[in-house]
Structures are given as C-alpha cells and as structure tokens.
Amino acid sequence: MAQSKPQIPPIDRMTEAILESNRITPQEHLQITRAMLDGKSITDEDRRQINRIFEALQYGKIKVVYE
Image (cartoon, rainbow, N blue to C red):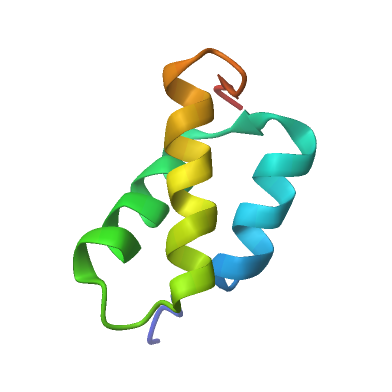
C-alpha cells in the first residue's frame, strides 16, 4: 500500500496561525524555512509574513514548542 504524505497547510495559513499564537513547532519552522529558501512557491506577502516570524523568534516574541 502506498503511504500518503501528511497534509501540510498552505504557508499563508501556517504563518497566520504562528503569528496569532506566538508559538511555532520545529516542524513548522523547517517548513517555512524550506519555503523561504525555495522561494518559487511563495508570494511576496508570504515572504513578509515569514520574515516577521523569524524576527519575532529572534526577539523572543515567538516560542518554539515541542509537542
């Protein structure tokens, strides 16, 4: 039987949820980092949101949670 990949929410929904909750999991961090490095599949707005998350992480406004 073929295994299906877990569904990954769209970047815009993920970044919105992270910014609202001020929490991020290591998996979400990896996903947004990959999206940012890939750059092809994200909009300018997605890029701004991701930059906001990275800045908030740097200043301790968003906490990494291990679930």
